Image (tube, rainbow, N blue to C red; front, side, top):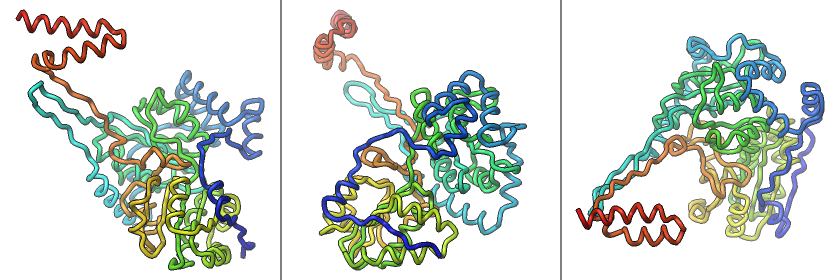
Length: 450
């Protein structure tokens, strides 16, 4: 048995203050063991930002040599070969449990089907002033980072690689940290084969992000880097952004449950625990209009967590980051949820569809007790790579559009010059760009004289 879970309970203004995020990005605090290890590797204490800066610079300058050196230092692995041969993925797929293989194939098909509905098409229209439109082009090459920390996450690979493949990306590269004597987890390699990616590299951490961003002798440079990772991966993505596109800076995962007096306390607690077991930094938040439900949740969390393998992680996550907020009405609950802008928003209320139109900020909405966020993590269809840390205010889950770009097309005619020329000249002169104005004036004179 684990000790009784103590989770913060907040009411009224205290809940609003605690759950309204303001976008602060402090220097991430590292555990002392990691600080000590960094000092041992680099000869003096270094912050997470400083470590990432050093690693990125070294990989940019030295290529494979720096990748191998940091893999040995951070992962305790000597890389005989950075790239994993395709035959190894195929062997991994053949070796995994048939039930797991079937589950991944079911998930892959659901993800593929969902994202095929998102594909944008080029369009070109002819009008009186010419031909105008936009061309949709897939990115040529992307890199997907697949974490390998406390658990291998083949689902994250599927949730990113399959939308990219649906978008038409020409080359999809996977990077995953080597773990133990057997290298990359077989389930990750099996997922790579199911998702039909093109290449896999056994590199983790900031060195993987730098290799994908700048290219090395073995790793080709990509156009965009996607996928979650630890704090060093997140900071490395932030550091190389601009040299290469990134999907987002993923923070710790989070779920916010809105529940009323009709909610099943067992299911509410189960959904909170499913989030808390990800990581000690994960956040499981309950906003409820029922004081009775709020009173019963801590005991139910304790009872269910005691049965699970990751109970210590669940305990630490809930006590450090969990919140039960009691509010007066469903409207107040939605207002607070929008202020928090959660990655996952679960609606366990009498009429969940009545709340859906009022949701402005969320990575994903899970409607009703039959639609737990755990289903969304694997087989519902939408990508589970969603905005965290309040970024759902302005960003979206991974989708096909992340892997396509738009090229504008304009083929104006002489009528356009005649009709739009004066306005174009006026705007150009207002901005002091007389060369722009002359480019139009010359065409107007030519049209008149010609």
